[in-house]
Image (cartoon, rainbow, N blue to C red; front, side):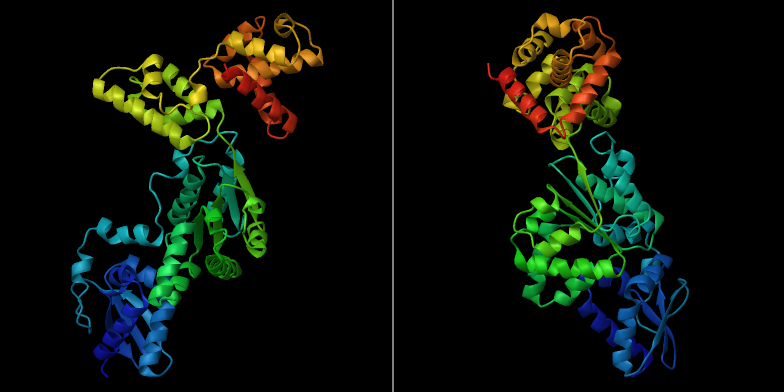
Length: 451
């Protein structure tokens, strides 16, 4: 076989081994430009293609050529200028003349599946997410060295997916040749099933076990799916042994995922487990301010505060509510007030939120619940059995109404706003650990919204 025939045979074999997008992006326009004994020189149209083939497919190409020539081979890659005529039939000129965006797009789309909107600079950090955000930053800075695996958990719509994509973007920005892959557990399972049906499990394993950073979202959906768990177990082991970074997200910690194999649950706990809580009021307002952008004149701050008070649990719903208000304001070319926002969002705001609560209503309900008088609560006494209910009342007023810190302080005997802030932060912090306080707050909200 002459060199041209050898390379054509190699390309046919590689076409079978690789997925169609990978082959057409990186190897279709590669050509054999030189051969000395068993040393092959492969020409590619761009430096990006040269780097990618050296980093990802060099071993596969060597193995394929070795099988064809029945001996060990060496492979080198070089960028072929547009004027050069390679030994193979395919010319690199056509691809070399393509504009850079056309050339680089498959890298992002195929190799990473990252959303360009989900980057660290677009993530609003609050007390609820500070630890998780710091952990993700550390992982992005030094993959596989800070925390491996990194396990993120929290409720729906709190920012786990955003942080995972942000890690991917930051890694690619700093390490251009790293292979980053984002996948949901459902997609992982579906691709595995398809690969089994088509007899291409080797391709599937190669795809996920050669990543430098693997980001797996919603891992809880693997629960009960034994074959998929088995495959992911081996993928995890393979990457971890090669010192590759793994980031996993779930809506609950590993120990609370039902029917998850113990060996996976154990491995998920090897690194760092970080949770993301529901955003507090200030963070929700900050998120809305970051999203409102040029429409700030149409959606004033009191409307943003109203939305932040009414949509508390889910950041996606929070942003969705803002988008609806912005759309109405921009279509009508007029600013929206709180009453208009309430009407626009009446099907978005939870039914228990439809009742408007006043400072006085909350104060009386809390005083009655803790068996003290309203006068005692608003007075100057510092007895523990009075201070605690006062702090709870301030916390609930801040959470359930649009009242400012100074306004709440004024309602409680003219106290300074820093006193109100201290009360709010104390109850907010204690409620995360104190089950009795959690129960009290739940009962108080039921009382407030039950009439």
